[in-house]
Length: 78
Image 1 (cartoon, rainbow, N blue to C red):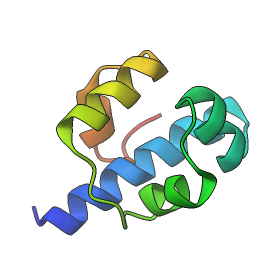
Image 2: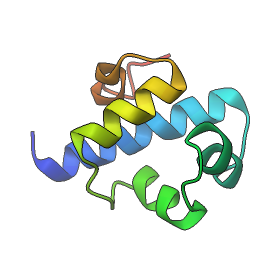
Image 3: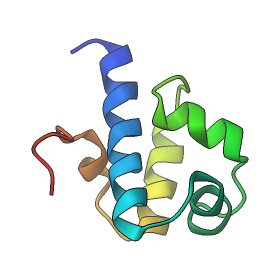
């Protein structure tokens, strides 16, 4: 799997989790991920940002999920 595909997959999974919670990108970034800027977070959802493993672990912890959840195929996730 190409690196760009991993970025898109992580972003798609974050988008799915955000939509499940029924909140906007701005609110999700500010409240759930504690202080991310809305524009930067939008880039994450689009797969345009290169996240470190530390950031992925941090986001997963804040969301109460296993970090591996962010790498799963978003089409197969519920």
